[in-house]
Image (tube, rainbow over the protein chains, first blue to last red):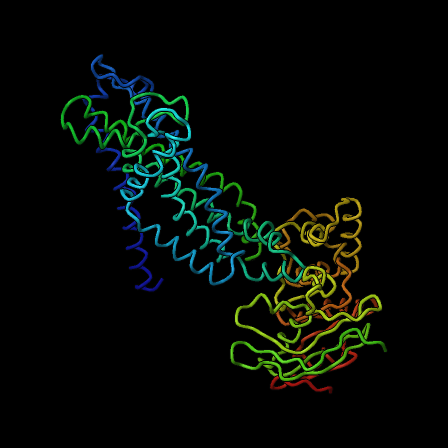
Length: 294
Length: 231
């Protein structure tokens, strides 16, 4: 191996090791700072109990449910919306319209979340309150819709990138066989862009899980397990923000580390399981590539 | 010999650059026509004006008329009422590099039929077998139809691509340097296949290989500087 290649290899390896160590250090840091709470309350209790500090209950179960509800709803709304948008921009829209839409999507990625929050408070929340005539309008639904709008541009851009990377020769083959645009989409573009679609979904779900501002502003912050999408909820991230704003050393404060660890594990499990599914799905095509190289 | 393709005053442009310059030509049925000429002279573009594949590229435009004689009827392929899908099923195309789709051998052949509206699995199965036999591939792949088509050798992949185009029973088959990416043995196999297809359809083949043209073609046309002439 040439010396330049050797140096690059060492640098990349070092960067990877540092990246992995930093990620693990964050976990260690949260466990260590949360130790006073974990030594008196088991993880099972923390994850399953209700939140009632006045009765000595520091369970974060309602917040896990809150996050789960808001994130699931936002992904449920954002995924088809983003896929549809990406298909429109890539395949269906006239060129000039596609260009305008693409620029708008790019612009949306730069809008600060607090702006979405304002739009939510002054436009969406009153509408939800009016439509359903229930509660204040601050709810899983309001937060889910806004969060979907927040994460959709990320998904759309990643989907578009993966659509553009689909093999031109496969597209030409299908066109030459008389394939319509719909057939091109179903038989070539979507299967070819599968990896990118999963990546886009993962990135967007990471952003949805980690978002604080929207949940804080429009989810209602009620410490209760939601029974309907019209119920107000407090998410794990909103809980961390709310507690940190008012406290810094109590047992309540220590729960933010339990929330942090839960968020950490949540995203890790989501990422690993989707990667695993993707690995299994593409194993065949990898084998094909391997055989071809011989 | 009755004509199957008639071209009148065909000019083609990519942006401001003229690629084809006022070409008029006619091609007879059941013949192998070789198109030759220097690289970049517009041979592939010429092929793509016959199945309108150029319309997939931005910045391209053409003028003139291309007509096909199908079922005793003269059809202007650029007329508004001509379905692009229908046209491309009638005018098949095989590319320079084999491009099987990333799916099984069987699905590569069944997909064009399904896209054309065929539903009966038994008939599709029969047609797949028949076209594989025609492409001299059946004995090589009959036990591995569910394997990914990309596991085939280059020559086999190109024969599969020809079979894929032929399964739709086109009246015309466009071949854009179909053997240029293959070794001598695989190229000869493709040549034999091409020769055997001329009873079924008209073949327009771009080739730079003069020996191959001599072996296979009934008629040779040359495109130089965007203009076509017979050799």
